[in-house]
Image (cartoon, rainbow, N blue to C red; front, side, top):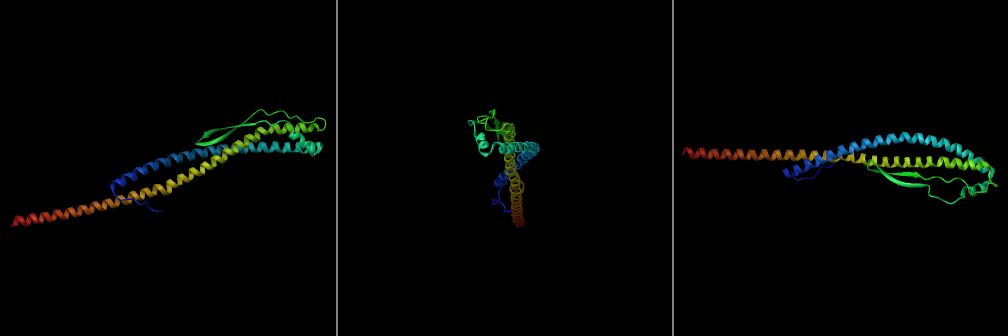
Length: 214
């Protein structure tokens, strides 16, 4: 770990002590933030696992219905039925702040009823298939929202952890070492000055004694 290059004087010593105090406070705040982020992350992980398992079960059942509907209707009629109807905005996206992380919030609008395709050329099971897709769509969107939140939280956790480690293992030790070194050099300078003063005092005392003896 490279040492800080500083001038060994009292003014620099005061500056370094103030920097270390600020760094220690910042380290504590970031450590507290990291702990809260981890709590939020772990709590959301449990919710996502439950939701994903539920979505996967419903998707599996929906895929089965869709496969039967596609087989009965034929590929052309099936694709035409899926493309029927006018496009609409299904999701409104906003954001909210969680521990300084801007997390998207997906609000699902009211889904349109399946329709717009010929009821003569398509089997009745196609209605069930499209209805199943419409029923599971809000959960898919919710899962996407929660997984994006987890991704953003994980990135913020990594950034915060790097900053905590940088303060704890690099900056604060560097400042402490620099403070210690300056303190040692100032003490050494004071001892040298004291030694010189004592020598001067002895010389003056010797001269005064010599003058008194004459």
